[in-house]
Image 1 (cartoon, helix red, strand yellow):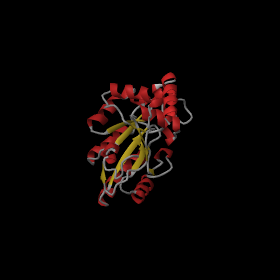
Image 2 (cartoon, rainbow, N blue to C red; image 1 turned 30 degrees about the vertical axis):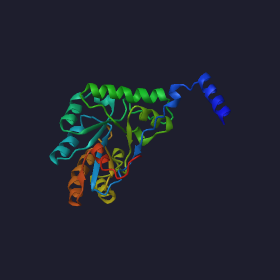
Image 3 (cartoon, rainbow, N blue to C red; image 1 turned 180 degrees about the vertical axis):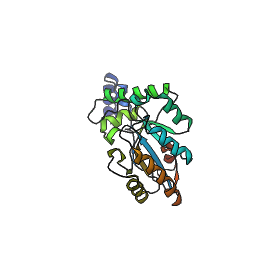
Image 4 (tube, one colour; image 1 turned 90 degrees about the horizontal axis):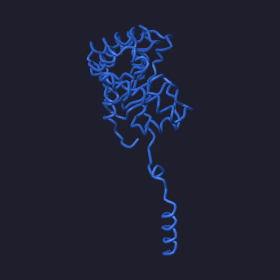
Length: 234
């Protein structure tokens, strides 16, 4: 045993392992719903800001004293910095949806990092706190994307209720009924305030907030919802 230990020690002294191989980086956690018994849900909005829909959505949220999370696209935000500021001033949470809304599945590590980092730099330059939440366009990921986003300190946020409002096939009543039927503690609900949004999104949010409040639900940002997580160590 002594000789075996001596030989192993000698080998490692001659062939040291590179430091980057010793570091273990966990991939970004992919969170679709928070495990909690408290009746709290998160409204989230993707693809903005846009001049048509973001102000209307913000107005509904402010009138109802509801905080939500906006997953912002950089090439939209750079055109409308005043709307990003309005979201920040209203105490909404800003997460990243990438700079160009790139699908990151099957992308190289360099592409993933550039897409996330470019948006991060832009958002912080507009006064947004450094984002720690990332929503993948189309929800599409792979091990490379999750690893790189994890290295950058992100949590990847999916959804448990998909309103599909961007398809413009559903009325506000259809959307509201779906959300009311599928709501459960810790649910993350996805809407859009981007170019493919419509009045149905705005009107559905108007209906959903009082309806869920009647059921005893409260609304909060994704980050606040995560603090209610029952089980640690995702």
